[in-house]
Length: 265
Image (cartoon, rainbow, N blue to C red; front, side, top):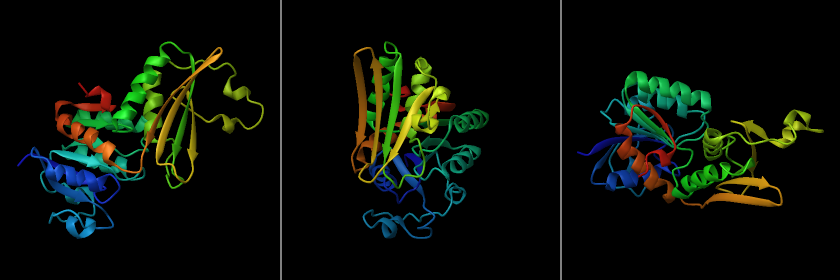
């Protein structure tokens, strides 16, 4: 048996192909699947395309009754923190693919991971192009002093900003904070129209039909602009390879690691 993996959100948009990928990997073994709506059914019954007789659990605690090495969360913004803390408390390493966590949540998760001597890898987006967006934007921030972030997603997305936008703002703050020519509090009119200030960056979240997920960092300087943008398609495949990389590497760490690029060679 390979590395034992449990996936929460197993019947979701990313969870379904992720379960398939884990089950097909020679060095991984799918030992747990969590979906409140599909509790008690097998994955084969719930998804219809996996030849797996694994019974779906209704809670993380129930699923982790089976010995597990790595817990992967692709659930929802209102469930992810409790799920992650449950796994950490059980001494299980964690990979977080769900958005909605705030900086203060990550601080708490890091402390819990240190206390329980487990690793946690969180990425706002596990797609390679999103990782490159962060890397290129951080490089641009060394030379350009003004920027803002545009965050696009489907009108059905509950949390804002997206995890990708939050992670980008956090990573940019590690370089420096942008200059602001006119302070937000001096805005004439509705100050909310200037977006939310997140780690020093102004972030504008757009929620409209036909978007999946897009994030754009716009840098401005005298007589020139630079735009760096990531656009996700309708399929979940771009996230799978990055998630599997995190699954395989998370046991090498103790505490929280934010960003897929931190573990890429």
